[in-house]
Image 1 (cartoon, one colour):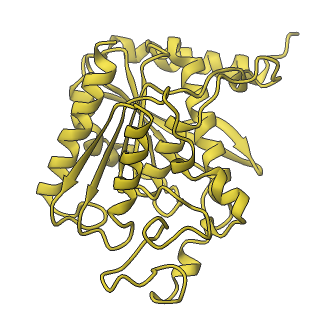
Image 2 (tube, helix red, strand yellow; image 1 turned 90 degrees about the vertical axis):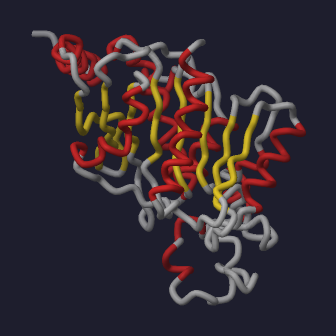
Length: 305
């Protein structure tokens, strides 16, 4: 009797799940697909497939404070509807969460997720070269890292997933922290400043802040390894930044610095300023403005390639 390898079983599972999706004429969901394992746990993602796919995919980094929480996909779908209406297949990516795992470990997880999607793109009817990523706050940070610090994979890896590229074709980052080095200045550091311009994270200005963001409690070298501002090169993908100019948690200057670095390297970039908006875009008007900009960026850079 032949024994199925994990990779073969995963492929067969995807094929079985994909068959009914191809016959449907409405949006559909494939929940809790396993893209990897770590520390005895499964790393999972949800797939939201549009009624009329355009062949491109957009990966949402589900992360706030580098905590990645599961949400009922049927409830989460509304947040992806604008992308689905444009034909994008959306993947909601969850990673190992703080406090058990730190930022470099979360970044390793989402990097694997991109490789997984590229490997299995044919099974989803997708173009492996038309992959975009986005997220907000910690999710925005992880999206920038994916865009600015990717690689072609290891052709000699025993794990088939690791043989594939982690490169993406477009990035949107909402209110992202861009420099996680412990010695970064207040204007560069996450969490950056509060209204009195005191350093949010360093001096106990906000009670419990150090405990809340333990994922970034790393040494200088590790912090530098996940600081997007340090990885800008001319071959980076088109990158859009969206930020409220009244953000009291991740200072607006983070996106200004990031855009300046991208422009200096000749990378196509944009910065959408949500006037008066704080962290998280709490009003319907702010969310709509950000959503329109995000969808427009992906339509421009993924749909027509």
